[in-house]
Image 1 (cartoon, helix red, strand yellow):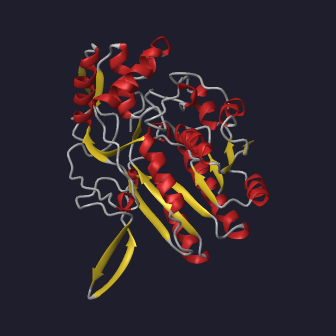
Image 2 (tube, one colour):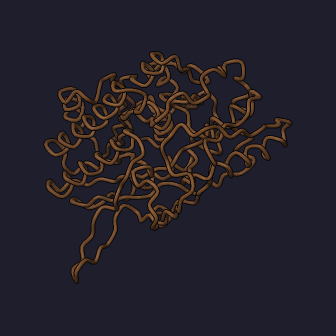
Image 3 (spheres, rainbow, N blue to C red):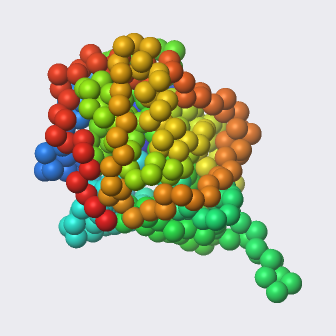
Length: 380
């Protein structure tokens, strides 16, 4: 296939590119390095400073010569149109969005930057596909955070409603907890508008928080790991806990720690997207999958990290801190996630060995850890 990856420098974008390069697809990679720029602006650093895609792509080309890279901003309609018109891809994987709830809530500027970037990028993509390659399969990364924590079971994207002896099918109600999540909700509405009006075919993946280092659990190659963040703005909870344990600071649990979410290993993220590449929706169809493999409370994650790392003589402590976020801490949470399994996903469940693997990678770069950027500073 001819596959365009938007946001190829990111945690998931790079992992996806590395994995697909092994499958002999023609890959067109796009990024404008905006996350790197914002991290520098906010004095946040990843565990390891990774080379730019222009340098790292040389590693991928050992496996697959048919890979190209463009440093462009997806908010530029003209530039996106030129890339799509030139390559006419069979599928586009859309990661080109600012991915942080705390970043979006930091101030007016970063809130608007999140909304502007995410909506403009998605709008440009949809409009280009409509006009140039309407049969192209768009795979869009959404988030389970779009749904919030309703007091009913969370269905996979859609809900059937019966009202006054009539029935219809609607997008499942959404209630984001940050401007980042709100941008994702608006993405979904925008996608559904273009699908039903112009007959596009789109897969929207409602993904839970991701953890992990390697895109493949069998070939653990440090040359190909993505940028690993652990700070208060761009880090995800499990990766952050492991960094805290390695450096000897307490694992900071926000509030009561009862908050429940669906989590997924980066290995399974890649598997899920590959499965959706093989299962293209019909034109005029929006396929939605809840992309996570297990549900945990924050307390459960912290305790699992503590018990797992004791096996390699890392003795973590857990500390509860005031919750910097406006969110329900005690709530009902039961999200359906069977559709991706029906396509063939065999989930990689979180266990002690996976946590130890991540901790060993972090330990190799322990001297790079900046403990001053871990504690939460963004409150809303």
